[in-house]
Image: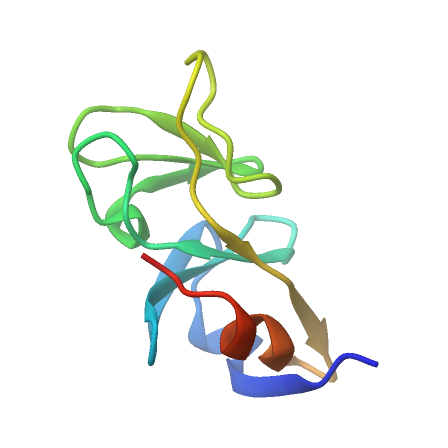
Length: 111
């Protein structure tokens, strides 16, 4: 059974925007798409460690603000590259609140 941690109201994250959540393992970027879907990924691009929360959200992707690497919010994989990915954390919205998987946060380190 998954335990969920309430981190914010959905409206606290702008559409096509992000907020950073600090965990004891590192920072996650929590994104909200134009369709109000929510994704949580490591906040550090695998290329040059660019802050992904400051990137441009388009569809279910974010473009790193430093060198335009495009990363899938669903899988964490870098698009158009043979290697590179970021850690993804299960996230969902319930009753207008953003929830993160607490088991993931305690079992897996974020870079």
